[in-house]
Length: 515
Image 1 (cartoon, one colour):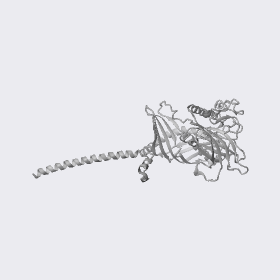
Image 2: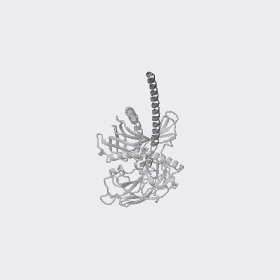
Image 3: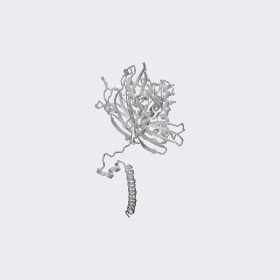
Image 4: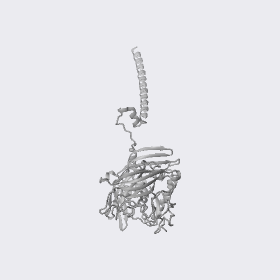
């Protein structure tokens, strides 16, 4: 009897234990599901939503990481780097060397790679975020850091100076790279890639220059020239909204939607300078102003001799590709023998300009836009501008894009013909692409139709071959997009690295429109 009762109690106890275990598992499963739902809801909330829920009890230690960690990618990149570096070296040489030639400053006749190797240290990707997902596109921002051991030697040549090898040492790159993948239905499923550097945070490229078997002083201002060339290439070609579009896989694809297009026309009247800094030992400065949105399209006022309160009252037109991120830069120089001296610089974000409304503004001049480099705290005066922004419609946008390409082609032809040394040189004597007057784009007003490349004006000249332009010039050719053709011989500035040298306006050229 005791045996039977023991067996019975054991079965009952086992059944109860199994039932309890099953109940506990179901309870834990329900709790896990409920917790997962709560976590999912919390993950969809942003900081402001949590502040509304928590009120004053919001914990400051809660963080919202923008970038996802990709340690696995860095591990694979370090293993693949020898192969990636070899391929990247070829791409850099093919893509960057033409830019070095295009943005080569005056005074330097040749600037190219003598040696290029990316070394053995792979870059590090701190994180990746998906900025936006559009139909047919994936946009990602990559936090990129590289403190490598590359071997980069530039061959620099100047007039009357033998070639000087310049080594870039201690190279460090800190930037956020924006990559846009254009998707396709065929393998490799990506038809094109867009690459650019975000303007915020500002790309940082640090390096030191060393002359191999020579001295940096052999070419006055060489170090500043190279610094300005690197900065111009990064700002004008690689920094968002500017971008590089690379078709992939041999798939025929229309990349026109990925390319940067003109967005609007900015009419700038440089009215006057106020209480400018005097840089002369005897007399006063001879100031002129330079304005640009893109460094490749700088325009220049006339020089006012011996005056610290110059009145220029000259109007230029500039093209904006992205009003949200681009700025108008104004530099004031003192024309001098040898090298022109910078009196100051100022910047006006285009986003601060209300469309289709004339605005007069006074900008304080600074020694440098980089506040870390500002040592001289003394007042440098100001410049007064009138600005008017007009946003293009579709037709005006296409017209501006074609004309901008035509102007660049004309400058390249002038360079090939030996009229200018590079596309960044001033066009003295033969022809000048001058920024002046209200152009055809945006307003439809012009002093004549300027066909850059054929050159129709008060004298027939072939801009691109230089025939008929030398001596007689095209003093009243049509104006377009802030560049005009003129045959006036302007005073050339010295070869200071910061001196603008690609567009020029003097008294004998096209008369600027009044503001």
